[in-house]
Image (cartoon, rainbow, N blue to C red; front, side, top):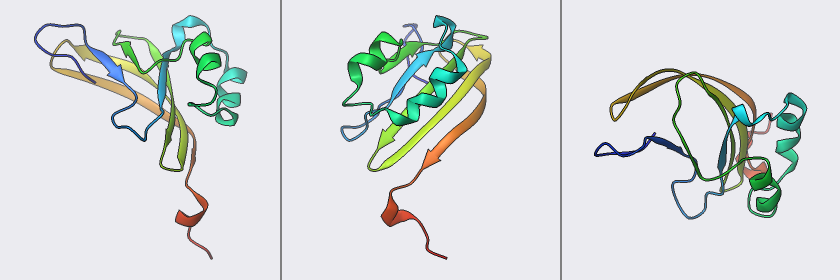
Length: 112
């Protein structure tokens, strides 16, 4: 959640250089099947396809809208969706979220 000094508030998906995460406002009509297929994509390699699907590095905050985030950083890959349930511009945003999938790199997994 970002924005200051009465500028437009927005969600930012990538916060550092090794992070290729992207976010999309789901009001663009992305289907559930398309969401599940996102985990097969690489946010850096498939950037043009994701852009056509409405994904970008930041998107405006809108009350009642749902968003999807494809998270890719340092071997971690994930997909989560969230809905804005309360929004006070320049102050706070409350969300309800659901993690669709989360993967750790092989070396980070604990062997049993």
